[in-house]
Length: 358
Length: 265
Image 1 (spheres, helix red, strand yellow):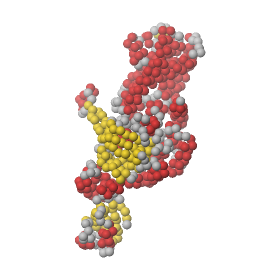
Image 2 (tube, rainbow over the protein chains, first blue to last red):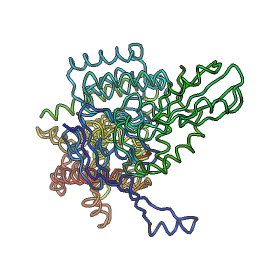
Image 3 (tube, rainbow over the protein chains, first blue to last red):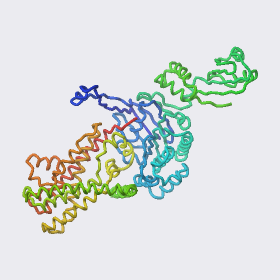
Image 4 (spheres, each protein chain N blue to C red):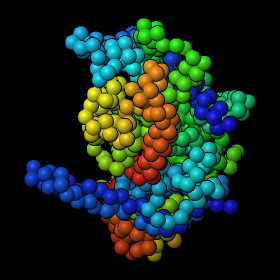
């Protein structure tokens, strides 16, 4: 069964245009000009129950607008949607009983009162029985290690602590669908990975369907089996993460550090017959690019036996780069053009690459 | 019925939380009470000053006008305690807090009322009751079996009128991004409702009776207790007006929410 079904969903906003200067301001006073901006352009997708789906795109691509329509905050301009068996904007009050929402930039909690009191208030709002509440709270508090925070006012919490409390607040009523809008924004690595682990467990133990938007692609790699990529209000990719990597990944790179000066020509000679590309900054460091069809070990085998190697690093094309290249091409279909773009982006992105030591 | 209980429970819960936060800032609480009372006192002194120059205002004696003022304070206090939408546009529309409200399973307008409750305002209502008892005693008004129930019903109806008018006006925020100056204007007009409408010219009488019916939050219902027969009919009409205006308020609000655009990305 599908937890979320979206068919030709569209949202257009009317935005007031402000004319320039004093004269323009006067003109606006009498006759306003409006401009229609279409934030989401007839998108369709379906998310089965129990899936963790990443919803990515650049700023202004329409991610938040979609999430807001799915959670019943905004009424769509046209199209149909069904979330957990409800049409969100029609039966809002009954519908939201079944979903949890975390907006990374906005708090669900009351600023001045203790965290536990916010939870108590939410218990009343969501009509959770005292026993269910206790059981659920104990479980969540233990899992997220919040025992010491419960009596502190929210304004005295750090961002990481607050975010963990936000998650509890969104899950107290045991929703079957969880919407997360940039849940890890501004958090440090430790909290980020804690939250990822927690979400994974939630999904596994309770079968919670999760839809999350993020700019941090490591969230996606850690959590999502599926990605929907949005650009300018349209879906440009919808499918598995592995597939995305395979289709878009262009190859891998291996960095060598030699103990003894090794000439580029020598290296090329060793790997003659293999479609690899060597480059070197100096005689002690060299880089080889290996296309996906070749095994890294074949190339390594040729080099390792003959050179004096002090260090080897294998660099995988990571999602970051793939996504950047897709954004740049504007569509996941035009593979050739995008591959070019990927290479261009490649040279800019060395510092963000994922590095694994052998 | 369960829905009623649910909402009553929520009122209790928000009230408790208000107390918890406010009692940590006790001074703030009392400053608010005192400034509220001072505001009412200036209005009260104004009435006394007027009656230093004349014996009657459109055929109403000083004690009668003071009684009307006392009644006026009661629904106003209840309204100010539970309906507080002065910063709605800024807080909920511009900052986008409406998002959060819309993801919770209680009526959105009700949630906004609860998030902004202001219990110190109720003290003004208490003062109003004292004023009514004192001026009523001087006028020798009888306490009938229906006095208290009528007081409750008329108070609730007047609160409904206030709520309807202000809710309708606040829902304009959903249509226009810029905050409008219309609420302070209304706030000034509502004060006309506590004087005998007969002292105004015809156009203003019609305005205060049928268009923005602030006469129904002061003079008309109070006339019932003052046994002013010329206005008894109007007094009995108060609940009807309350229902109509609350209906209009809710309708425009619900329509407005559908147009909510959200804030930020």
